[in-house]
Image (cartoon, rainbow, N blue to C red; front, side):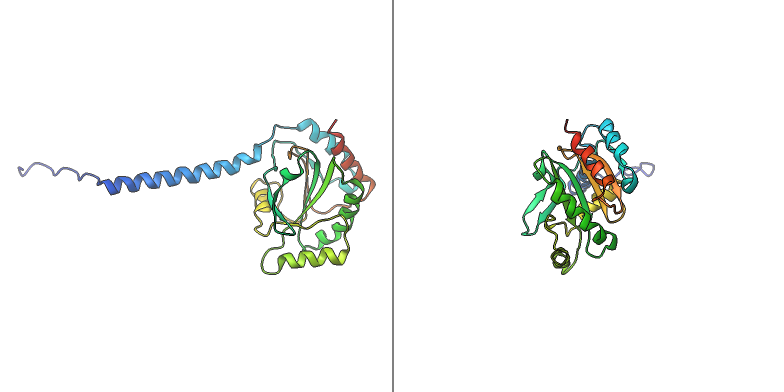
Length: 219
């Protein structure tokens, strides 16, 4: 080699190329998972007209409820029953749902539960269901939820729980809710029709008007 010639650039070794390939594959998988989770937010067709019907019924005690119908779906939202059996909201397919997220440490949640119990007793049927999902996490969380429900002698509110908090993290990620209590009104396909951030007096003329409007969407 002459003094003026330049050394050739070193070839990438096979391990180096494999490293680049693996890194690229990892990024692709991460992106796929992220996009998949994001896609869940639009798993339903837009139902703006239906949301407007429920929104129009939301007055007085339920004035804070917002009709949405933007295409978010929750049929795959996972939680467990009191025995630890895995469930999703798809287990209630065919019913309009009032899905309430609560925790025993949440004072407004505790105050809201008697009204939800009364509504469940009056309305739960083959067309409608109140689905309370407890979010007490950490050691003893489930026991605290069981104790609260037992003390309140709620006859119509089963213990469903998500001690991973993943269900509510999903709501936060999709900018649906930021604190407890929070309530989703869903159609029989698990599609979001309306959202309420905060407590409400569901066992009232205003609360029942909203539920009647939701059930009435079934046609």
